[in-house]
Amino acid sequence: MAEKIALVGIGKIAVDQHIPSIQAGSEWELAATVSRNASVDGVESYTELNALLAARPDIKTISLAIPPQPRFAYAEAALKAGRHVMLEKPPGATLSECHKLEALAKDAGVTLFATWHSRYANAVEATKTWLQDRTITSVEIVWKEDVRRWHPGQEWIWQAGGLGVFDPGINALSVLTEILPQQVHLSSAELEFPENRDTPIAANLVFDYPGGAPVNAVFDWRHEGRQTWDIDVVTNDGKLHLSNGGATLYINDNLVQEGPDREYAALYHRMAQLVANGKSDVDLSPMVHVADAFTLGRRIVVAPFHF
Image (spheres, rainbow, N blue to C red):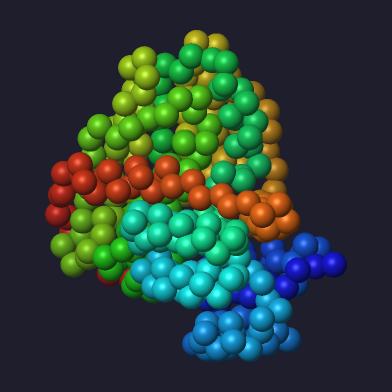
């Protein structure tokens, strides 16, 4: 029997990914939503989370698809009410918030899942397996997209806590931290801030990797051409090209794996497993790299950005 779940936040990502993934699977029933501005046909709706928590004790799991700035208060309320919680990426506005939520979940004996959807892209697991026993000599990440296309009019991204270009860039970092055999740490960064915004629109990152292999990342949210989400890895045994955000894998220029987008379906399957087994999954390593970038990054002021 499907478990009841409530979805908080009915914005673009919820409509494009969360709702179709929940409704297409057999593990979850979308039993209620919480939003001040939107609802889902045929699904009970609330405008406040506390009202849902009081009225529907039968809904044991809450999925939060809202911006990171207000997310902590919602997650805290749900955990204190004894509900399992699933967090859209990034899991919070700060690392300390996430650590507190992890402690709350442990104390309440419930599941907390900090999701990284790009880790579930079609070819990521095969990439990780291929790299395990090889010596890496270089890594190059190019993550360039058009914010106007993917986040039209979403002002929260440009406000403190919204991450700016790291909203998509953290997807690349979630893949990087999943596929590499050894951990990297950030050594330097340049962050380009529009003069009218609180968060960066572009970033250049340099990481240290054991053995000295160069690891670099370029993020740009102004890119109007072909949308690019690529990771290239050179090893002692050939070259790997992971493209389309992790969906397509080439090794030595030969296509090895590609497939459809099932990232969010995989997230909800993983959440069902965690709840069934009484476990949590809170890996904050991609967010650590973003925090380090804001700490180490040289700030460069660029032209204003307007939607």
